[in-house]
Image (cartoon, rainbow, N blue to C red; front, top):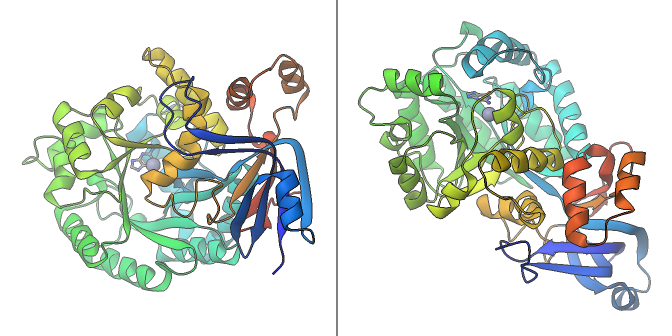
Length: 432
Ligand code: GUN
Ligand code: ZN
């Protein structure tokens, strides 16, 4: 059995932080070590103990850096890598003007394969080891996504979007072809290696009632798959959705009519929800996905993080690139902090780092597999350098506590702070 030891400062959460003073919610080991073997973490502790336990192990010494679980992104669009930073539009115009144009290129399998490679290189470069991903409407885009993830032994979740109206002809499937392609993709990829499928009706505006019925059938036939869609992101979107489904009292009820809610259902954005919608999300264990950089970039609104938590709605965080503007979960939490400042809510750095790791793993119901550095966990790991640039180095001179360091990393950090990435125990940074 070959064993690899990572030495450095170990940080892993055990529960959701209740405040910045909550020191019971995490484990921190100053001169710590993890022993990795067969893709798993097999031991964790003081370096002196672990090195004695495994005297023949190879050692990667990451001191003085922080070793944390790989970041998890719960909502990202793989076909939108070349949409990021498209000027001057809000959601519906942005979709029609930029996004639906770009997504048409994924009709070409060679484009899908090229972009899939770049997508995973980019994710890993930013420390993201798991992402819940929308592919384009083309089956070939999901095939390329899963094939490349499998080659890299990544834990990834994805699905081809289904959309049969209010999109260009070239991006429309039909209820039947969307159903058939999804069935075939689930058969080929769901639960294969570290891959899972997310049934993905894009949103109510681009699906007819018949397509949502087909989505319902898919969920009933595959209850262990995820479901992902968009909800209540933008006021014009909400009005349009309600016009299309006039029997629904509100936007969420459209999805409720087709039984799409549940504890594996991820709803992107959830910015403008009524009290009834929040209560229904809470009751069904559905997950509201907070996408800070996207919500600011598209001028969609300010997510009510505290309000959601008070009502018992499960939440996660995500980049939502290409509406979002960065692949970095650090940058994402930086913008989350600023949104909550405008709402007079405080997001502590402990909470941010919890959300990127264990919190998102819990939202996906896979915290037994990823999101912590616990023994038995899959060895998806990120090493963080808090002073990779001159400006960060200067600021770091004044940092005296772990919490200050985390907040500085979140505020100033990005891909330059990622000094190593391990996927299932193997060094996997594309450039290092
Ligand atoms: N709503 C429906 N599709 C999309 C998308 O691709 N991005 C965002 N931000 N919202 C959406
Ligand atoms: Zn999205």
